[in-house]
Length: 267
Image 1 (tube, rainbow, N blue to C red):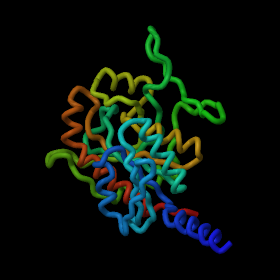
Image 2 (tube, helix red, strand yellow):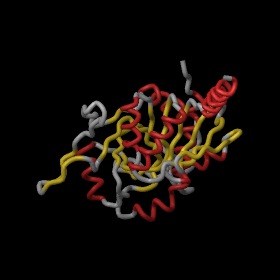
Image 3 (tube, rainbow, N blue to C red):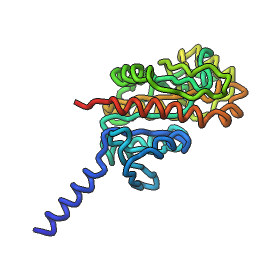
Image 4 (cartoon, one colour):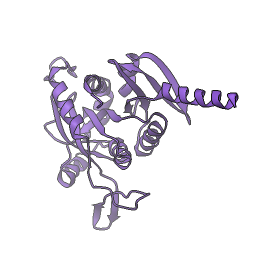
């Protein structure tokens, strides 16, 4: 009986020690490096080969995960982080290609709504986007997943008091705005695709993970927010621009995320 009670207490203690309030995800090492480097009392937990870093950041308990690139990797990591750490909020941070011509490298887009640009029906007449479906309820998900309105408001408020890096000394100061993000399993380097995303989805930026995270959070009723800093214009110059500007863009996004989590208030 004593052995059984001791085992239960150990399980409870272990679970509580890793129970975090805020989960932060990024696809690439550059997208989470700044945040991980500033963790207080960091610990690492390995789950099915995925590494999660826990600790305190800006005084808040967080868990940070690198998802890997693409929708499947992002979905798996999001599911694992929800199952293991039961976060109250999930924030995705990283870079994106601009679809809105007003966005420049280094700018930040706060995702108000997210959708897939590669989920639907492809026929001889072209591509017809469709919403995904919840595998458990069998109901259709919305075409656009809406980020938590209170997190969007908070992000806008704190963005007024942060310092962001310019991608070059002669570049204008980075601008922060809200908008629509589209997600797909392709790195976009096509002005034709950019025009299509703008026309069909009224998109402002494109990337490879956000809507997958948003879908999981929507189905599990977890508030989420996707923050993206522009690394390229998703056009023919995107491969070179991405390599040149991904680190500064990643750090700009992480800087905003740090400011957001410091002000999140759980009731």
